[in-house]
Length: 393
Ligand SMILES: N[C@@H](CCC(=O)N[C@@H](CS)C(=O)NCC(=O)O)C(=O)O
Image (cartoon, rainbow, N blue to C red; front, side):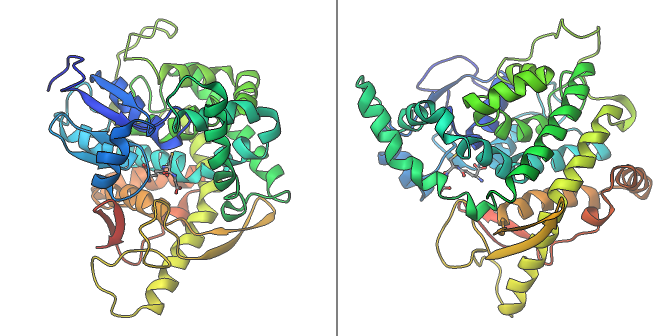
């Protein structure tokens, strides 16, 4: 693979610093040691080439040296993985079965299960970080030297994003529970990162790439939540920094072999993190699966290739309508999140492919971490990504 920084032949990552999903793709490129340049959608080529190729205004998009355009942070990681030998040192997908399923689950939780907390801390504290947000949203849209023009460009789109809070179930009733859940997660992660540089141990994996999505752009970069993270969980803040750096020997930890744990083991300190994953993402997944079933029932005979969305629009966050579920003592009402189901399906596919003995080991882990109900879930019909959208398989 071409690994020298030649803007004509290296990867181009189309995205912005403040974008949640771009953070996953960026850390993947960095950790794999690949040469890339990052370009904002304010670049004239975005409209001319990228938007046309992808068929939507969204990012991240990876432009490969061969001229392909890949949208979706998970598809970007899968593509980059396909360029590596599975057993190579730069692969980020564990080969052993239990580790693979756990890493996939955390990937999905970070990307979709934590969207609510990321958006809460960005927009519920808008007053305290207004200028930062204007500048960052403007950065993606305006490339000139006029500071006020950049801020104005940011202001023009911010209301669109902040208005999605009710759709995500974020309101004064749910906000205290969202914050409580996040602070518990920070605590569990801080304990974990005391002992290990990465979620799955001594080596970066897709689990880190999923979790860095909300933890970098929103929770580890916007002023209000960054201060919270640094004050409450400095080891997590350090991991966020580590995810922006190439793989280097970690002198701050005791000497170790830079790999995942042997014998398909999961770090003991990751179990409290998994407990929170099941507790906090589980009710949403259950409700989203039920909503998917309901949609399928309402469309008998629906064929493979059918767009999975409440209408025919190609949306980056498709939904099948409203869901309502009990969570941490309150009732959450929000739009169902189809994309989270696809990510969950990736974990379930890995779980299905296991041997009976490995399934038993995984099941023991779920029992210790309260994941039985969630892992008993199955998508009533598989989905796949075709032409940058989710469709029935
Ligand atoms: N599933 C996509 C999500 C991409 C995404 O939501 N990107 C944001 C920018 S960070 C976006 O395009 N938002 C516009 C919208 O929600 O319509 C991925 O993983 O790349």
